[in-house]
Length: 105
Image 1: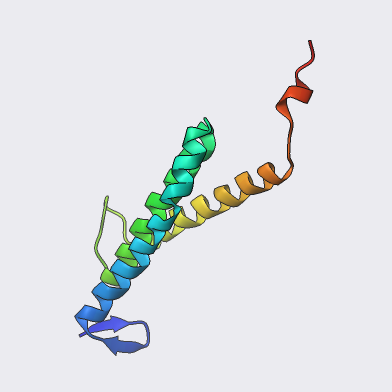
Image 2: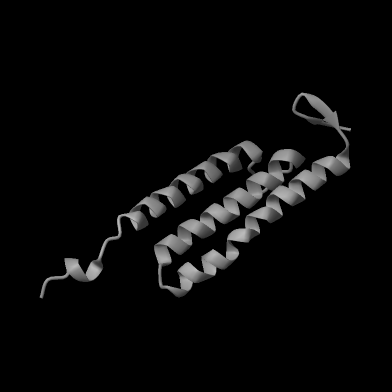
């Protein structure tokens, strides 16, 4: 049995949690392809960073496995940075900047 916070859980529960929460991050892959095809390279890089850090956080946190020398807590910090950057990009998108209007001939 493993320690799942304040309760005891079985090993299959740990792995089920790790797999389900990690794989659910792959739902963002179609959106990642769309923004990459639209030549939004910075936004694509931020989204990819967020995807990888979130995937690894949700995998390492319940299992206690170290990946890249980092535990779930370290991946959680990177996941937070990725989420904040994705929201920053979203708010910039909401500004509806028109690049053509900014270019003066």
